[in-house]
Length: 303
Image (cartoon, rainbow, N blue to C red; front, side, top):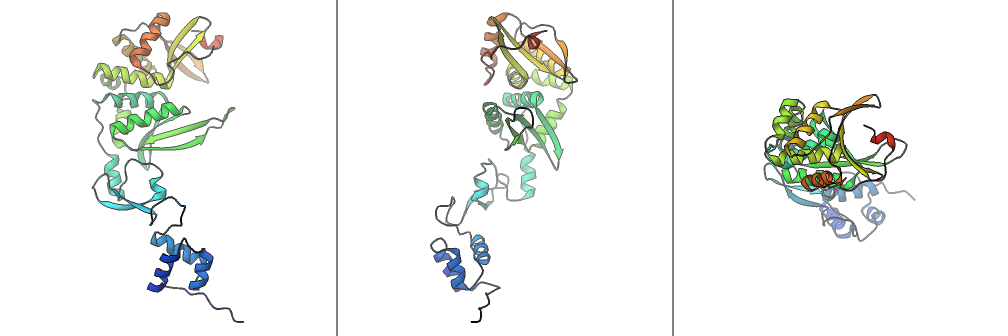
């Protein structure tokens, strides 16, 4: 028996109609046999037509109509992309670049909160596209960062990675593709610019201090003694912390230095005992580190 050669080339209207009517009802193998085509050819044609099998997530055509965040043009987006949960979608690279250059209102205190988190435990990068990011293992803090960014109107992207150390903990990396925020963070790397920024209003000082504390602060008890500290490798950031604490009428110790992992760490400690700590927590209202942790080692509490 001579084996019949499989068909190639363009699909006829009858074949397309048969595929639309039976895809998802008949196995791909049977459809391919009926049309005398390969299974891959049937699958690729169904994908091109936007067909999906029952039980799969998505609409009948496997896509949905969305509106471009820049120009307002309506276009199709696949369900696989929609499930990623992006806030904004762009119809072209040009529109995406315009969206990433969206202005940031520095008078919004939430911008100060984002700046505090990024300066404390974040990063900026200039690879292909300018972006700022924040990396932490605490999901509550990551959610707060994302929520603040969305409130300001910025697009948030995230992915997970595992940090290779003694304890393999999952670290979540959240970043924002924003040219304006990137340039703002870079500008605020100067002491005079940062001091001017936190002086915009009392809310700016509180929100910036909240971000720095959540990223670089500690609250711990040793016996009956509680201690709240903020530590950073940048001296001008600690100087700004001291200025914010003075502005909010908190008592703090003179900054001191310790050498840790070959780097100089500048530390500011809140004075006044538990009463001052309660006052600080009620004013700043951090989402984490608002309760004393377990006992710390003697070395960590030494000044």
